[in-house]
Image (cartoon, rainbow, N blue to C red; front, side):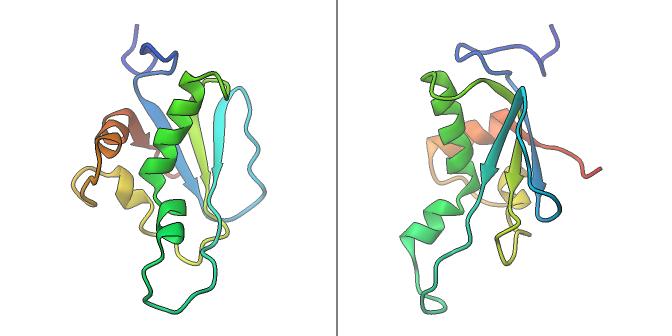
Length: 123
C-alpha cells in the first residue's frame, strides 16, 4: 500500500493533502474532502494581542482538531482538506505553517500536523 494511502489507527491516511484557497466560488466538501473555513479576525485595536483571533487563525491547531473529530466519529474520514481563507485580509502566512522550518511548532499537536499534513501544489 502506498504511504499516501496507508491508514493509521484513526482510519485516516498517513499523509493528508491541504489546499489553501483564498478566493473564488464557495468551497464544498465531498467524499474524502473536509472544508475548513477560517473567519476574519474581529475588530480590536491594531497590534493588540488577541487570544481569540490567534486561536481561530492557528491552522495547525485547527487541522489537529479535524483529525480528533474524525477519530471520535464526529466527522467522516478525509484524505484532503480545503482551507477557505477567503474572509482573511491576508492569507500569505497560512502556507508557512505547513512548510517545515518556516514557523516553529509550539505544541506536540503542531509536530503531528507537520508530519501528517502536506501542502498541495497550486494548480
